[in-house]
Amino acid sequence: MKIVIGSDHAGYHLKGAIIDVVKELGHEIVDVGTDSPDSVDYADFGLQAAEMVANKEADRGIVICGTGIGMSISANKVKGIRCALVHDLFTAKATREHNDTNVLAMGERVIGPGLAQEIAKTWLTTEFEGGRHERRIMKVMNYEDGTYHV
Ligand code: RB5
Image 1: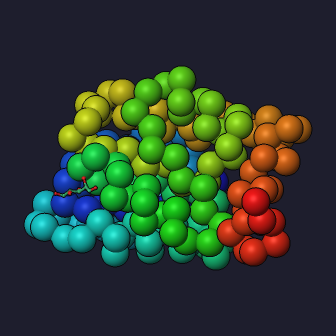
Image 2: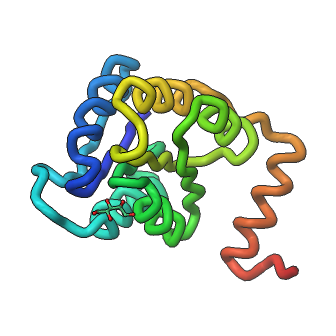
């Protein structure tokens, strides 16, 4: 798969560790930055990575900031994106099986590089289960495009 990755300054070091593991799995990486630990705004990188997934320029995205929260909020503002903030292996697996998430967010100030690499591996190798989960996702996506109302 083609994986786009982005971080702010607070996720810059973890981004390097995640790039290593994604490459080991044989995927192609597109790194949209940031390219140093100098202070930047997470929205610029989270939105850019999410747009590439939404526009099908990448198959999936991984976004990293200090907490992962700013990145997940930003990515989920892009139409077509289902971004999960994940800091444990159970959720990494479940969010692929149940939510078919296309962007993964993590926080460098929350977990260490070893766990983050395992989360990325699990998230990249777990398939969506479909079935009843498809119906639930479609309600959310159709709400986004205005064709489903509650
Ligand atoms: C940067 O200091 C920090 O606020 C950012 O990386 C992120 O954690 C925001 O959600």
